[in-house]
Length: 469
Image 1 (cartoon, rainbow, N blue to C red):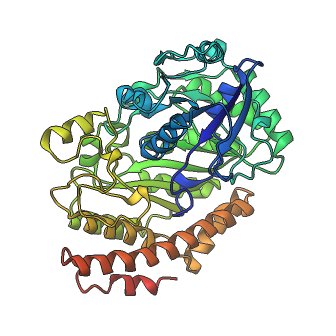
Image 2 (cartoon, rainbow, N blue to C red; image 1 turned 120 degrees about the vertical axis):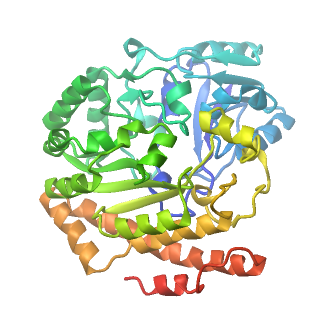
């Protein structure tokens, strides 16, 4: 019996966004570790491999973004007589939908129930559904990164120290459906860090946790471990954590190179509307200056299309952010994930189409050639879809310039943090993002004119942004 874990990553390299950094699919390594030895395992990862599916059974992790693509693969494999097992967060929230494309589905965290799934697979008696449960810390084992072989990921030393999230943002799925917030035992994490140091001695650690620092006692112990190991790292933080000056100083002292901050919106009304209360009345701009002084590069995660966004408000936000010295701005349009409070609310008002992720064409008129992070699948009462796409691209183009001021600022931050090489990576990402955004701006403007819908004032915006450094 040969079981192949398959990682499908649609549109991976279509746009330079922090969302598209190639990194090892760690959940598959977790499952591989608890797969019985009677089953031969392999990995096919679209990030690095040509997708050739050869085996007896196939396991896919399904996200809302890749659901339709995974279902297409699954249907073809089942027609060919292969066994298909689907799991992941989308399967957890849409189990009946996933069951139509699989021999078996696994909801929730799979590792505690995976040996049972494998035993049934070997015996030829797979059940339609297996319900996993949150893995307790006592059963968390070190990830064996040798499973990924010599694949060339951009951030190969990716790991997570916590599971779940204690926040309840209304657009987020994982915080509600993937178990309570838990922390990995530090001795287990230390084994992973040691293994990563051996396999990738020059790579920085990338923590992929939704909320790494939520438990402050654990966070202090984790940072002390990183200081002792002398490992440089990047992580995601919430705005309130980012604005906690002593915490950021401790991060810097522990080897932090950069943080991605869940800003979403500069408008407190927007943050309150999506239950992101930790962002309210926080001195974000001051915190950026403080992080720069500490030698920490700041990536601001910005979302447009939120309930209180208007063309005028976003124009003002764009002008304001031009004076906030973040190292990188990661832009995306709001995505309405199934089962979230926001999805149910917008479904009731008719502003989002049920099961929009299965549509071959969007129910709203937008530019379909853009990457999924800038796609539109809902109606906003203050924007036409392509208008919001156009404005998102302007944000990227105008906030990602690489003129002398931006270059010198990022290099100064890198110098203070003794991480000039990392600063160079940030500058390269900025440059490519700006170039791609300018190219896509032209495409969107041409589509606007062709459709005779919203046309940007003067239509010279892309020409203007062409002159950006």
